[in-house]
Image (cartoon, rainbow, N blue to C red; front, side, top):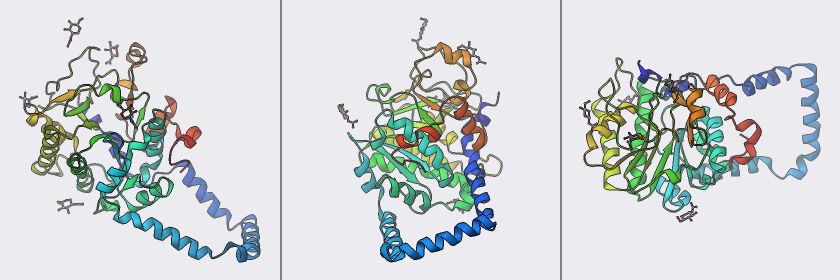
Length: 355
Ligand SMILES: *[C@@H]1O[C@H](CO)[C@@H](O)[C@H](O)[C@H]1NC(C)=O
Ligand SMILES: *[C@@H]1O[C@H](CO)[C@@H](O)[C@H](O)[C@H]1NC(C)=O
Ligand SMILES: *[C@@H]1O[C@H](CO)[C@@H](O)[C@H](O)[C@H]1NC(C)=O
Ligand SMILES: *[C@@H]1O[C@H](CO)[C@@H](O)[C@H](O)[C@H]1NC(C)=O
Ligand SMILES: *[C@@H]1O[C@H](CO)[C@@H](O)[C@H](O)[C@H]1NC(C)=O
């Protein structure tokens, strides 16, 4: 079974940075209707209304440029400033998001808000549109670490641009550790069903989850699992918690190194996960690693595909990862089918509100 092929497939979605959503198609209809008679009528009434109220509106242009001005200050907002602003109890929760992923970001944020950890969330924006959008609605909770990846080359899964984009992640995480904070990283195609923090027991350096779909005994070991068919483990780079220890920093440095010594090639078309697994393999003797329980942190290949297992482990699930599926719309539909697509009915629970 080539389970690796199914891993981190959410990334393939980036192949289509502007997915056709129901919202964008209705926008198109609206544009077309501008040319119809009703459209013209609406336009005409709009001009009349503007003509009547314009004098009392002050200077709308000034309004817009001052808003643009206050947004552009976020260009200079540094990671150190951002982390010190959002961290609570020395802990920050980070994700990395580009514009097409905003609906997933919001879905994830709603689920985090339900467990009262949203104030610790820092969004690492991968483009300026995301930086401004998040900080406009939720000031201080997004940061962009320059240079912004080129949107044209960064989104195609398996491309070198995409590899470059995900390679930034261990650098950001290392920087946060060096600033002295605990950090939890999550992909945003996740939903929290319960508070994960009580599961981060003991004082280990790095906590992570297994991306395999095979069922483990409920009392499985918390050690790094044995390597799989490719000679390495299948630990997910989607959910990582680290303490600002020498050991955790060593793993991040090794991850960066592994990404450099096994660079992207046309043949392998790799993402960042194999390098993370090699980093764990090579530092295992020096670092205190902790595998989180599968029943609490199952891969999408298990949670969405094995109903028997889901029943058996009912009440034990903490974070659900919507991976082992390809396509933006399919992913949304699956969340929908399992009652985990929260943005349509519960947007107001998100600190970003409706996007
Ligand atoms: C910070 O830690 C204390 C003690 O562990 C806890 O009671 C409190 O809820 C935490 N605050 C936040 C915002 O997580
Ligand atoms: C990716 O990074 C490499 C090394 O830094 C660079 O040479 C290359 O131009 C980048 N490619 C893309 C598409 O961003
Ligand atoms: C899990 O439980 C089984 C049966 O009770 C036991 O044989 C096994 O050693 C346990 N495994 C671990 C890792 O504790
Ligand atoms: C690291 O990988 C090698 C090659 O697959 C394997 O022999 C070794 O047991 C692994 N080490 C650990 C600590 O998992
Ligand atoms: C599904 O889960 C059940 C119960 O844990 C397990 O016995 C079975 O092997 C799993 N099926 C697959 C295909 O992994």
